Length: 471
Image 1 (cartoon, helix red, strand yellow):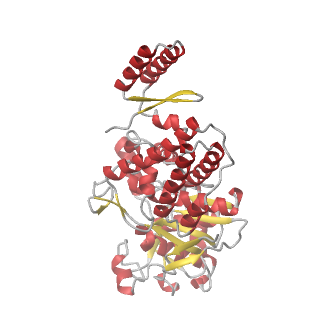
Image 2: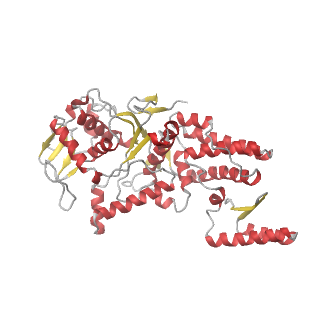
Image 3: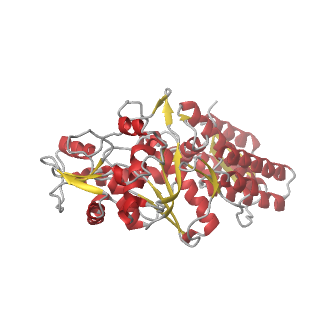
């Protein structure tokens, strides 16, 4: 079953063929660590985590090498550190730890590499030096700039015409530029900002060169997949491509930087792209205090990754409801049909959907079909069929990062320790009453549990319980 991915460069869906099936490489632009990341920042995290999982399933866990960088040199970081009166590393370490914790809560596997700009400075300076030496960059007034004229293919990724490339560049048109499109590779640091020594004077790198150097150092060129948000196509990825190939070969003729470019759509709130600058953000760190990470993951994957997604409370609640349905079927199967488990298997219909450019809506629909099959086996009391259906549901859901918890843990997540202790005591008392055939007392305890918003399920292996869904 072949994998097909939409390639931004080709502007079409293409069969995926890595350079080396024994070493499949993927790079995704990661966070700038100066604050908690908003949920929109986690859409690419979850999308490309899903792709990482699919690739590992196809090529083997050890065959896929995934790097997601950390930008820890940035004006916003400098500003945050100055406001708090702390070293810059205090800010970056704090928010990187929070970012990784939030990513784990959303079910994201840890990338193979998580390179940091501050730990890649020698490689950045060396790459800039190669670009200067081969005529792809030039030094001017303490800056080093990439010469876009040296790369005739500049603009091919975004498909923008020359006028748009000039007008849309997120850089100042300084007098020392040879071309308005030229962009900074190295610049002087302002007083109080971190700086590093270089052949062009003390300073720090521009944004774009950082990723190119980290890709080359961590993965080597060409890479198989380069991912990120749609807002990074221009100028960031356009500039990465230009400098990355030119560092290896002047003019970049015949050179491939990334075999597939993939970009996810925006996460929108109130019809606007979610953005800290617009002030319309929902922090994942805060959402995770209210909702399970799996529910947020489901919500992020509920639409096709290339399309914009409207982020609302309704979307999250529906995601939680969908997962409740799957967990309830799984819970019922364990209680009614025994806990015999076949080897987890990925259902062909789920694989087909995910291999079709990560068609998550179709894959989720297939999960519900698998749930219905399991429910039918439970109704027929066919334990063997239930075990097979449960294996397909679990294997398929786990591939997508779902049903990772035990059903009881999922349904009891809304109960604090005091409630759990009280419920367990009541269930034990009810079991004693049932054993003594004291049915009025057993019914009274069940009513007391119901008043606590707790549902008790009796099965062959004993009673289990869960917090009821809110009406």
